[in-house]
Structure formats: structure tokens, C-alpha cells
Length: 227
Image (cartoon, rainbow, N blue to C red):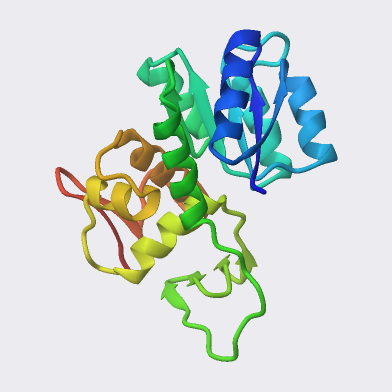
């Protein structure tokens, strides 16, 4: 059974989310603080983590950063804070998605399913593995590997899926809406998800992220990956 960890300090909201997730067929467990949630995830890794931002002690932003250091688990922020700065900060900390309270459980589980669809489990590498090359950057979707100048690049699942989508359409401009649909699985959604993850990717794959050579922006159109 798919397990979800809910880190939420409001007892009523946490219990409501746990019950709703269980009704949807998930194994759900809760934590009232970030510290408790981090310990729980280290003891027994959940398949997804839901995190509130306004937590006592360690806040949600730091909880995301600490989770992301140790784990590639998909992280969804569930918060009443809908300010652009907070959303961007949470995504930059390493969250994969952001849902604003009050939460519609059907929307939340749809987002979890979308995350699950794009999670790639890498097994044995086949003899013939397609590799996309962009200067010193090499992307191998089937092997689940990205290398820059021969060194492995550590990406989150979402960053990896985004890079693969761009690599598979090298030289073509993909709009933010196309990327939302293909990577996040949304017909409509917040395009800031794309912008923040592109920014994070540039920090990892470009020698000069401020002046990217490969992952470029076409103003008003979208992004493309070029050789």
C-alpha cells in the first residue's frame, strides 16, 4: 500500500487529511512537528510527504531542505500561505508541488497520482541506452543518469523528469503549459512550478547559471534545451 506522511501541527487538519487519505486507499501517518516527521521518515520511508509551512520549531521550509538532503521522496506543500514568495521559496527548498488550503482531497490525490506517474524506477541498464549530449552534459533517461563533465549530477525526480522532457525535444521550444502537462500531469496549473524547477536545474547543469548555454528561455514562448 502506498504510504503518505503528513507533517501538520493543527490536530484537526492533520486528522482530517489522514482519514481522507485512508478513505482513498493510502496508508497515512501523521506528525505534529517537523522534527517528529523527519524522525518518522528516517525510520520508515513514506512514498510521499505532505508538509505544512507554519510549524513549531523547525518550519516547513527547513523541513523540506532536510528531507531533500537525505531523500528523493516526492514532497507536496499543503499550506494556507499562498503568497508568491512563499510558494517560490518552498519549491526552491526542494518541494515538488504546492497545494493551498483548504484542500480538496480529490485534487490532492490527483496530484499524488501525477507525481507517481512521473517517478521513474531505475533498474538494470540495458546494453543500448539512448544518451542525449549537450556539450559536457549527458542525459540518459532509461539509465536514470545525468552527468556533467563525466561527474554524476544529483537531481530530484521532478528535475530529472523535466530535463528528460526537454532533452527528448532538444532544440524545440516547449511552453510552460506544455511542460506542466507533460511533467506534472496538469491540464492547467501554476506556471511558477516550471520556472522554479528550471532555475534549480540551471544551478546544477550550467557552468554559468546566470547566462545559460544549454537550457535557455525564449521570452513569451517557453524553454528549450540546445546543444
